[in-house]
Length: 143
Image (tube, rainbow, N blue to C red; front, side):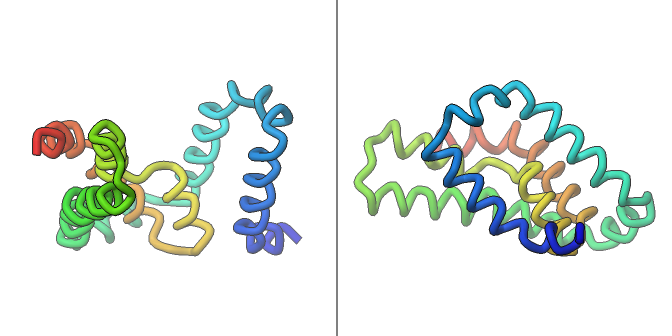
């Protein structure tokens, strides 16, 4: 029963997103629960991992470096191309490019977990990109 609900996650997400769009009042009161719920989700996902999961993933640092390279080249470039194709203002384009530089987060890790992917790799990619973003994002902003 539970696995069936989990397999329908994309459907539930779409239904709840539509409900939140059309009836935002139903969801506003739960706004203060976002951070605790995200923390709970990350904690419980972390409980499914062992140190060996991370050790196995760290044997291939090239994968993490490749994802970081994509994160800070392809994604900002796509954001720049999209903002140009939509004729956005300079301020809007800068915002879109900054979002394009943003590292993955809880949502990407949850989707990786639900897809039965390599969660340790997803977490290490998020960690690496987030740390690198402190230095790389200001440089991309100058460009």
